[in-house]
Amino acid sequence: MLANESEFRVKVAVRVRPFLQREKSHEQKSCIAIHPQTNQIVLGDRRTFKYDFVFGPKTLQEELYRTSVEPMLNNVFDGYNVTIFAYGKTYTMTGGNILSIGEKDYGIVPRAVKTIFDTVQNRHDCRITISASYLEIYKDDIIDLLDVNDKDLDVRDDAAGNTVVIGASEHTCHSIDDVVSLLKKGSNVRHTGATQMNDESSRSHAIFTLYIEQRLHDKNSHANTVQASFDGLVKPLESTFDESYLSAKLHFVDLAGSERVARTQNTGERFQESIRINSGLLALGNVVSALSDPKKRTGGHIPYR
Image (tube, rainbow, N blue to C red; front, side, top):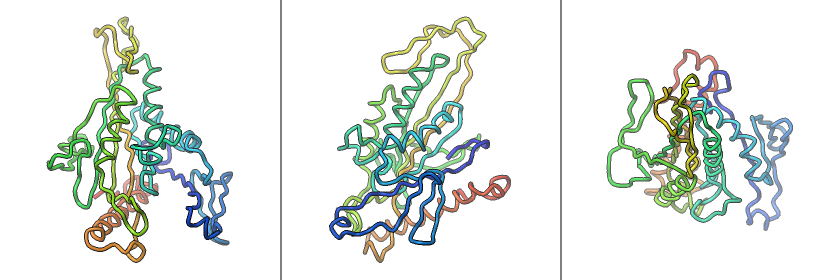
């Protein structure tokens, strides 16, 4: 989703999952026809859905990333905020539990991080700093997954109209390994639990954010010699040049799945979690629909709250 008026505000990619082992053992057949050339999915005989991108169950992680995600990352370095939502099985965003998967199976987040740092390595016109935060929305609470001490986090609007989370920690990242380490640390304490549908179900929504700050060198300045440090960040040899400042945020949002109580058979605490998950997804759906509607976008109400 791009904060760029010259582009579509919302783009949707759908990936059809492969059969589960139990589905194979029962020799079940697919009811979905995939048409990547027209970006359409046909459900049964009549219902056709069109998306911006359509991927089949044999699509490799690399292909999905290069096609639907990587083109958006240039917008970050142009100063636009970008948000990428993942909605599916637990750990969809990272490609699996990042605590145990190999690089070949890495999903969107690790691959995007590599692209970001590769871009930084090749930029010689600015000094770039990258920091990260990792938040969890569990029921009605916001939790800092990188600093899990009992502390209150408040959502506020700053003077510029930006939404900020007061009290959330931000951690400077000098390398890809730094970012992956933070991902692993946060994922290790995220709320998950067993349900009838999933042995390791997300019980919350999670937001991993990269903050990218660029201090651009004045092209008219003579003191524009730079060096690339071992960690991939471009740093100036001299500090006498004029600078202009550009910042953007890259959000990765891993959504918990919508849950039907009749299927999950959740009770007690799990039932309360399901209520909060579903209400959050409903509110998000209303926001996405409004952002996709040109009439509402140019003067109508966007129901952020």
